[in-house]
Length: 106
Image (cartoon, rainbow, N blue to C red; front, side, top):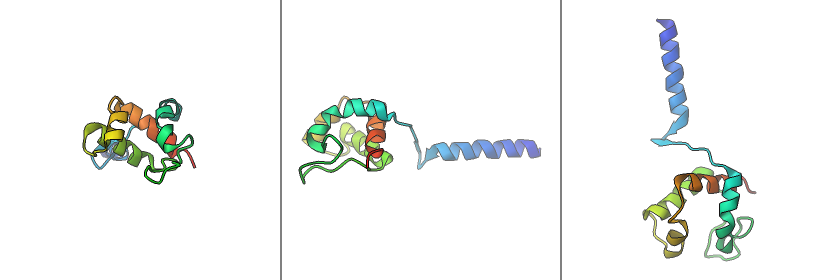
C-alpha cells in the first residue's frame, strides 16, 4: 500500500510540474526560433532590441509570456493588424520556438 501511495504521489507531482495553470508547458527550440525570427527582425531588431519606441524589445522576455502573446495575436485575442498578419501562419510549436529564442537573449 505504501508503494502504491508513493507511486501515486510521484505521478501527481510530475503532472503538477508539467502543467501550470491548466497549460501544458512546451519546450521551444531556440535554433528553430532563430530561423523563424528573420521576419521579426524588421520591427523588433536583429538582436531582439527594437529601434522604434512603438515596437517592444523581445530579447530577454520570459518564454511563457512571449509564446502566449504570439498565440493571442494569431488567434485574435489580441488585435494589431501588423502583428496579426505576421503570426497568422505560425503553429504553436513555432510560437514556442520563437519564445525560446528571444528568452535566451540578453
